[in-house]
Length: 244
Length: 342
Picture 1: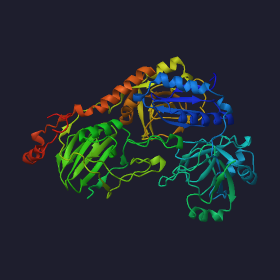
Picture 2: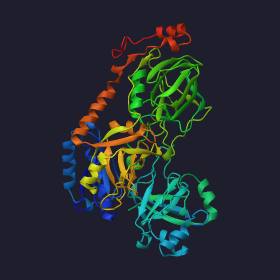
Picture 3: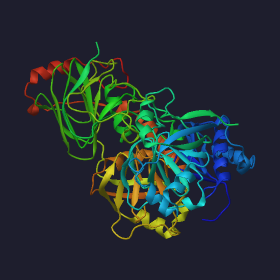
Picture 4: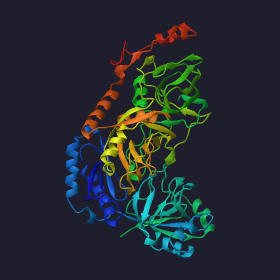
């Protein structure tokens, strides 16, 4: 597809999608998060809810309470209002440090994923734990973060066949991103680590734990500590503090 | 004292459903809720109660139920064979149920999802503002034999014996679609061919979506691209890698990376959810402005369903005990509701 960005499209009868690019970039990701925040703040007539994905923002409206043409004009005006690619990251970002077990019994596809990235096991672990990664979006499943971007060697495809089921807390990799699973589900992402972190807590007052813009540092933990991390509560031994 | 719906026997996959949890897309949680929201509105109209109360969603088959107090039920959605203590119960209707009566609901005779509504609704614990099971998100579970589900206070215990005209949304047909972010990735001729094609529903399908099979070549998009993952909504028609369409339903994920040729109008989604494997479905493109008018008209129609209620006329040939039914029917009260027929 060619064309200029950002681009406004209808998404269903009752939604608008603003796309900042057809591939993931740091700037398109920041633009999507910032425009969503601006849409929330603008509280446009008829607007019901907003969300983001990696490089796009979505606005749902109530057809019965909305002048669609006026809403589109208002969103277009907002889009023209600034250079969104230059927008700052969200406020109140946090740094999470999450203990992660890379033992083969709990991380059955680490060797395979490392080989696909041209790394041995030890350097793969070192690379995945080298620095904090940003929550680029929450999606697919409740509270589930997509984290990136990893170094270029991790630009490995998803596997063709699905893994039957990864457990909650599974750390998986593909296309320079990590996904930390919040539900147990089949997936094409390779299971390279295991945390005891629960990112979706429906019974709690704060059911969705991570937010876009947060950063996560995975910290290698010995396999023998996994049961204790799991028993320590839904954070699984994770710590959290403000990012400057 | 809270009355309870006692589940003596039940088919697989039965869940408590309501209008779902709108507002959490940004957190990765799709709205979920009943696969056929029109059926919820119909049950609410029949029972004279709000349409956000929870009901049992019966995928393909029902079970055997009892209530430990006097109650009312309504039966909507995919028609199923239903009886109370051996006497047949009309579908798309509401009925009084004496304490201890056994309600048996069999297999669907058309469509996929039947609904058992209770006067006062099912009053299980709310999670994030809804009682709906959302199995892919790990919220709630399926109903099991032996379950005793609490009921809410019935707002109109004496109002029963009404029926809504039968609807024809259970065997596929034509649904209306609008253009979306990736429609232009498909050539004009492919878009036209899409609307000329009679698709058959595959056996693969559930509350997340249904797969459709084209009779001829699939609809691989012209540019052969996968799309950067972006927000997806129920009604989206994803064209998967092999060119077959997959129509998303109420419990779909919140983001996805398949190109979407278009999106089904919410008003027409019950028809997609209800069709059975093998049924045929066709699509008709409509302009966005026209679609918006269609959608608001359907909202108004659903809000006015109560005006379409008719008195349930019982067939004496099917009644084992005419007197007992006359007694039950004699206790009608509807005089306080101007929408109800006398």
